[in-house]
Structures are given as C-alpha cells and as structure tokens.
Amino acid sequence: MTHEETIKRIQELVPSVMALEFGCEVMYEWENGEKSKMVVVGKIGEDFILTDYQSSFCDDANETNFEILGKPITLAVVLRAINQKYIESNDVWFVYDLRQTQLSGMERWNLHKDNFNDQSEETKTFIGGLLGN
Image (tube, rainbow, N blue to C red; front, side, top):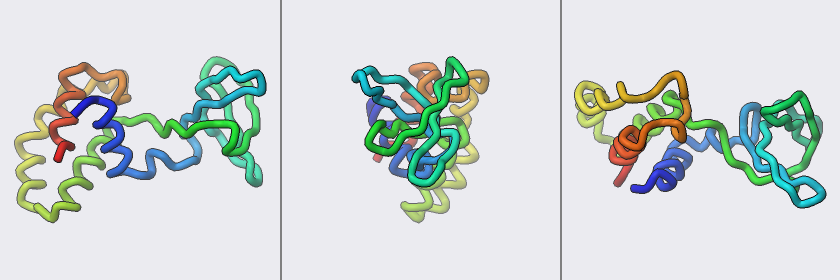
C-alpha cells in the first residue's frame, strides 16, 4: 500500500478527518488563480472563515473557492482508523492481539511531528500494512 493509499484508507475509516470544520485544511484558490493552503477557523452563515499558517490574514469563502484537504492525520487518528478497521471485521480477538503485540511498532511514531506526512518511511509503511486488506 502506498502512503497516498494509506491516507485515503484512513480517511475512509475515520470520515471526520474530512469534515469541513475547525482545523480542516483546504487548498484555497484566489481570484488570480494562485492557490494557498489555508485552515478553517470558523463559519458565518454559508461562508467559512479561513486563515493561512504564516500570518493573521483571514478571508471568508464558500465551498466553490477551495478543495478540502482534511485535518492532519495524527497518532490519535491513526489509532482510531486501526480500531475501526478491526471493529468492522468483527474480529474482536484480533483487536486484542493487535493491542498486545503488533502495535509495539507504533513506538516509532514521532510525537514532536504528530502528522502522518512527517513520519519516517518505515513508520508509514508499517501503518499501511496494518490498514491494508
């Protein structure tokens, strides 16, 4: 499973990662066609209040101005995805075994950079293996 496929699998298992709410990242398209990564910080009526990571600039936008990227995939989200996968399979015994033995590989997660994209290739591959079919 590629890292992109792992991210898509996590988004399937934990749909709240893609919820258009506070903390959700979007790719905002300006009137001149340029794009910027922004984050949702609020909502007024049908418009979302967005800000970038570099300044205190805020703008309001409707869903036609941006593409939803989702919330950062943190360790908590990864653990929810793993749990959800095994709940769906109704394999309670495997969940117990997973928590006792196989999750020892999660000790590789870099908590200082609590985002899937910032983890080592080894860690991303390990998670992909856990979430694969």
